[in-house]
Length: 473
Ligand code: ADP
Image (cartoon, rainbow, N blue to C red; front, side, top):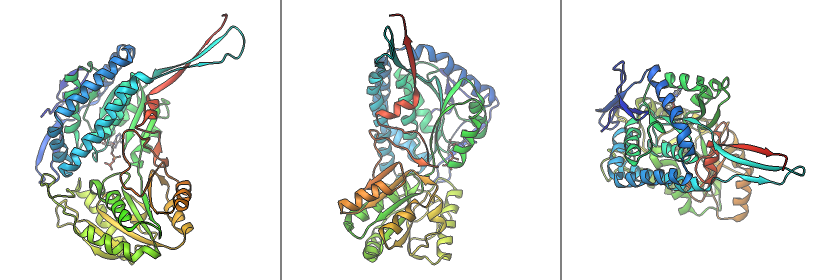
């Protein structure tokens, strides 16, 4: 395990000797420690990225793609070790860690190819004797700030398009899960990605945020995390007019209409709510079920929720690992208490036993204005709210400042088409809770963010157009 940070081709400890301790959330034991870099070291990482940019941006696209491909091959070769590292520092079950690596690898595979398809345009001239062209060029030095819930995939979906486009990048992983990020940096170095092109630094978050937002060398920040921190980064980036990609809070609704296939609706709810223990920005946070199917849905859902096993991520029987922190457990329990106080009934699960294990929990008859319908719970607590008409369901689903993902279950084409149009979100799962794939554009509307990651469009976030007007021909 590498417990130094990597920038400018150097592996380093913090000059101050300061460290960040990483804990195994299941055992509570120390899993490792990484340097907490200071201002001069963060600036050195940015300077290394600036120095590496001219050469990397002029490296033929195909060669950049080949290097990404080599990185992917090494990740594939070490995927079991990486999965263990993810489970160690994040707590998620090994099977989910493996699934994350497959998902995260998809971005590298995609953008290794997209690197060769970055095309400009030749535009019909506006007057005789002219040739108009629009070239595409990389933005420059980019910074990525990522959360702990997907320690690998949140990084690869930023690094792969940035490097494919010809940008250089300084990444700061979440303090809870820096080990996976550093392992990825080891493999990138081994793959031959040149010094300074990709750096992974670990530091106190606000210090890093202050330095990178104020830096005029940093041309772009790509961030996945809370809306609160996204807003801080956005306003701090104002004076230096940075490009931003923000993937923020979700508060996703799931709408189950009377005409839904019950089995499909249960499967959708299970995946949309409990994948990653509910610790996902696209997790179904509010489950609205139409009255005609309400009791049948609850009876079947209760059985499935009650059967979920919460425990050690390394145990193959485990469905849900520990939550990431005490604060996370407290938030889930505050949502539970608030819903109960508002008249909801507990029909599966309950509170944590004092550890970070939060039981898979189901509440019925939750009031529409409960906290769990307004804020992201980020844990394995499902609250079901009944609704009457189509219009009422859609109105409740849209009654939020967020707009990342939504899910709907129906077997009528008309309901599906109407709801797909009426839901104000960037993504919709129709009869499925599993929507994430590298090949589709991921992102939100409203306060859920700016920009898209994944798909052929994801690379646009790291490119500018340069217009050339050639006269006198
Ligand atoms: P979460 O609540 O999921 O931890 P955060 O938005 O707090 O979400 O964290 C997401 C990422 O943002 C992490 O890498 C975290 O260290 C980082 N972060 C937190 N505060 C700041 C800040 N003020 N400036 C820059 N990055 C920050």
